[in-house]
Length: 518
Ligand code: XMP
Image (tube, rainbow, N blue to C red; front, top):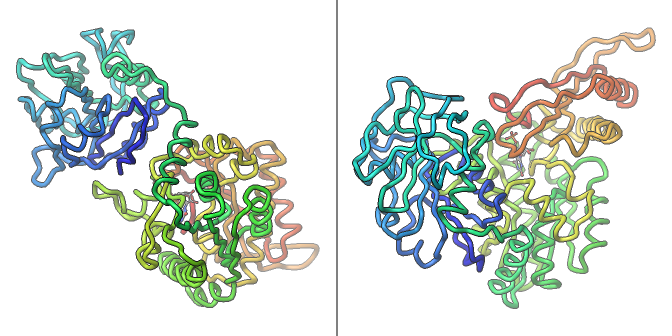
């Protein structure tokens, strides 16, 4: 994954299968230091050639003494490059350098009080008594004389350590989560004091470097980019357009599962920003035929993915000399599809936009946003001059309204859903809440209920309104929309959308629910 960036100051995060690896990377970038995630088994020799200022070992779900637990190249600890091990990462470095790791008498999840005993470097300016977030079963019990303990909690005698001669540090708790309020100071200290970074990196540098890299890689080749209407594909296309201009061809597949007026909006935005090739494929009939009679969510996704590949392939083969395919894949897409490089991330949903397509088409893949979070992509979009409507548009799943149309997916049900969905978005916008919410949409349920309209009995569909807030789309809270907004949504939906007589509000968080219903 190392992209050969020219950033002077770069830190690597070695991913041992942590839920938080990406969050660590983002926290580092927030301190204006460029950061990339790499496989945990990267060799010391490879790392040396990239000259990072620091290396962070992430946490992970395993025990270091378990058979097959992910290890690192021990040579990494001898490079003279500062290393910070977090949770599993700390256990790994201590284990490698003469410490003893065991299962803790009681697992520790959640907040803990931590007492700092050394206020130098890592803990400079940090209170002696601080709240930290713990999430571990094992811990380091004993360290050799080569290590200096820096902090402890009631149940964890060695909550932080420093090696006496090597620039190697360990934290049992998670400095990257907001539940460790002084975590950013600790990371700042690691980056500035221990690694000697000055913090000169900005997202604009990422744009410039990515554009340059794309230019070099593509040469005079042609790149195809799928547009979906979402911010990720728009930012990907914008980066490519800046890099290679007319060598870019974009394809928009109208699968009949788009939101209301979405196709027209994408075409209008595209034409006002790019003077390059756009192919619109009208494939509504084809997708609806593929979905006929299908109600099982994964099967819907599979069929949509398949139909998408077919349509895309047919169009792509018409574009002469195309060698590359650009995708706006973000890190959460990668891990939720179980496709992350490391760690046993479970497949929660099949995201059809990850994998499959490039191999089918024999294209080389360009994924410039693979390391970024959604909000970083938005900042990048602004940096590239994309308009607010594009940058702030709520994300939309690749399989579109099909996974919000529970049960059978028919043209008629999709039309109902499109109208209901447009009302949710309009009202959330009208209340000035669109930017403060991460996703707001309607879900058509496969449920009818009895109502009364005028003097007549009705037996019609129920719609669920879903609105969530999230930083990273991997966890989410349901949004506490004001009652008057909910009331307007409900009234309008029942009055304006033919076939709907009941509206419910979804009050489930992720986990245990997911954002989409299917
Ligand atoms: P879930 O439902 O898994 O969604 O909590 C997390 C985020 O991912 C979006 N999503 C998808 N995006 N292809 C995509 O491009 C997909 O198959 C897909 N499924 C879910 C979802 O809208 C939310 O933003």
